[in-house]
Length: 121
Image 1 (tube, one colour):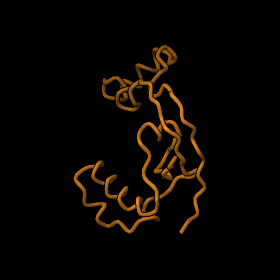
Image 2 (cartoon, helix red, strand yellow):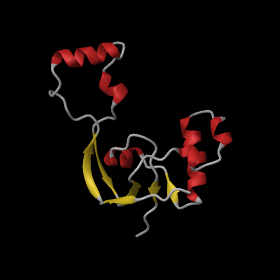
Image 3 (tube, one colour):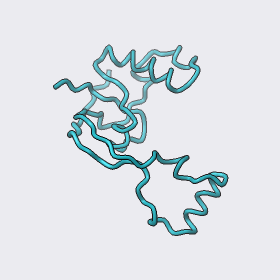
Image 4 (tube, helix red, strand yellow):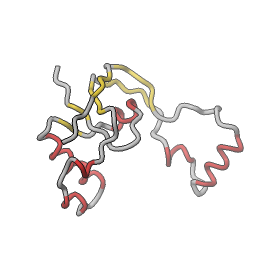
């Protein structure tokens, strides 16, 4: 099994989500909206602007291909992403891990599946 290195994220209150209004040139925003079939691209590609408070957590410093951690053939037979994540989390719980929350994931700026080592205080 792969050994993972985790970094600790400190407790904080942060502003997350799209917070760059006025930064993109008008033409770039229009091109992105056209790419998004006329929808506001921010609602398709970014989380909503919000302020969140998070407890400390540790997150893996490298992307983790889930299929190297789990023998989860039945994970492919799911109705939706929420059910798949629930099955993966139940497997990870046995190792003291879990998937990050959306806010934790955004704070850590992960790009692929990441693991959170459960922090007990």
